[in-house]
Image 1 (tube, rainbow, N blue to C red):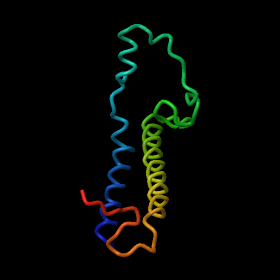
Image 2 (tube, rainbow, N blue to C red):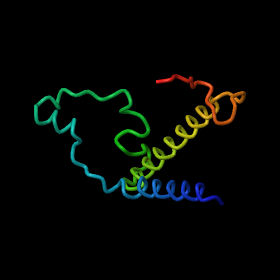
Image 3 (spheres, rainbow, N blue to C red):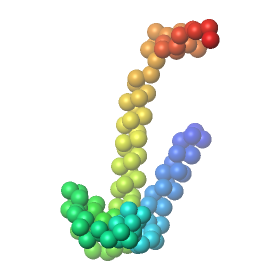
Image 4 (cartoon, one colour):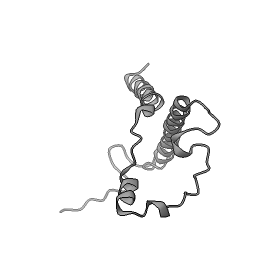
Length: 115
C-alpha cells in the first residue's frame, strides 16, 4: 500500500471517529446567529427551514431513538457525503486537465509574454 493511500485511509478513519464519537460532545449552546437573534430579540419570529423535516435535521438521524447513536450516525453520514462529493469533483476536474496533445512540460493554456 502506498504512503499516500495509507495517509488518506488514516485521515478518513480519524474523520469518521471524530464525527461519530466527538460530535456527541459538541456544545449545545446556540450558535453565533441564533445567539445574536436571541440577544436582539427576534428569535421568536424565526421560521423552520425547508429541510427542518429531513431525516438529518437537528444534527441527528430521525427514527433512531438513542441520542448518542443518532448524533454519531449523522456525523458519519456527513463525512461520507463530503467524501463522495469531493471524490466526484476531483474525478471530474481531473478529466478536464490539459489536452493530451500538449508537449510535456508545457500547458495548453500558457502563452509566452515577455513581461
